[in-house]
Length: 506
Ligand SMILES: [Zn+2]
Image (tube, rainbow, N blue to C red; front, side):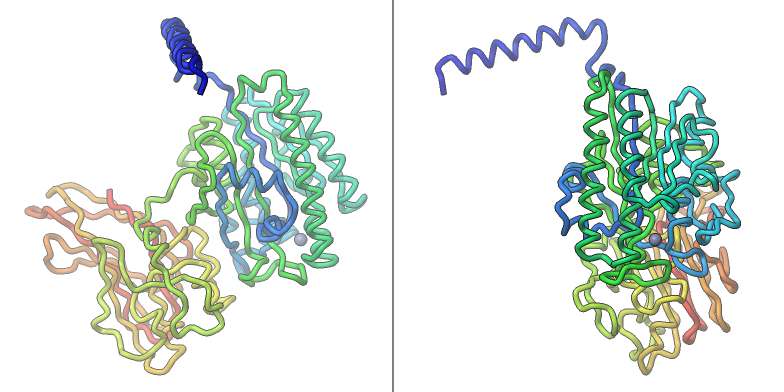
């Protein structure tokens, strides 16, 4: 160390402190940070398997993932919607799941874009002063209104007619020009060649090359942003996402397979998105909410979004079990490396298995805690893929899977919450996400017990309640100081399942 380095460092610190003291009277450092203009670029790459990005030489995507947050999730499938592009881009654009936006396949029939417009249209509705931009070459995303007519600048190329290799170049050129020379606040740019290549030759070398080309195109867009004359006064969030995966190595998608076609991701790098974070509670519908949060746009509850910013964690206590999930016990067909179930409840919770038989499939003996990766592998095409609003780890009572081994023909188990403090005479709201499929005589009861007393029935399930967010109110009786919530699934014998997630008592 030079003998002068320390005094010089001290002098520099003193100079910074003096500057800070001077500017404090004008504007605080916090206000200076807040004065940065928030802007967002969402790049959609069609049919992009993240696992293949990892394999490819894709330094731009790699750097975004290393410096940002990457949330992977699995798509719905039939009968809710195909794991295909129409539903996928609609979910990304609108911030709601297909049972709301209505797009089930690439015909777009049933679309509800009037009720659930894309995030750029929502920005225009919130404040027409927003400058919005969409550039794409799957032309139907403009002609069908997935990205609507209210967007300030819509640039459309036609990959289906002219080929995606050349049209993706034009999309990139226009995006670069718009980002560098104009002043968009929010932009959506679509690149399509990865999907076309995987459909035609699978997910091998040519697919990897297509990923690498798009990675370079993305770099050109990021370079254009960094070259903006006003870049120093701006706060750019970069989001990359995909509408669906591709079967590996054959290519193709649309069905209920878990290995690759239903895999999607949302990647965001920018202020507030932790570097290297890999949350388990992301859904594809979270892109819109992530954009609104970055731009400081208040989400109106009336929008009825299924969208949570990528950097906001779910409040679900079950998600804390992720690290303790186990590999298969009796299940077959699930790879031995896939972790996804436990009988151990979170702190304060318990499961009553006293009425459960000793036989049956071990994983599902009474209420269990699982995730989509594991649970939807147990048996495809039975709507386990279609919980839609489940996130991360959730609780399942699955009499159907339990009965797939001898001795599993009866099911009666109760999931018990912690005791919540309550005030006599007040009203409590129980809010939770559920996915209940009815068959036969099975029953699902939601019960409450005050101060450990007798169970009181709040709601009984005896018909389908698919992918629902429930909100029930309970009046607290005189003398009560605590309330426990119970979910009892009984009279079940190979009769589908009941899922509970993210209980909130308020
Ligand atoms: Zn496709």
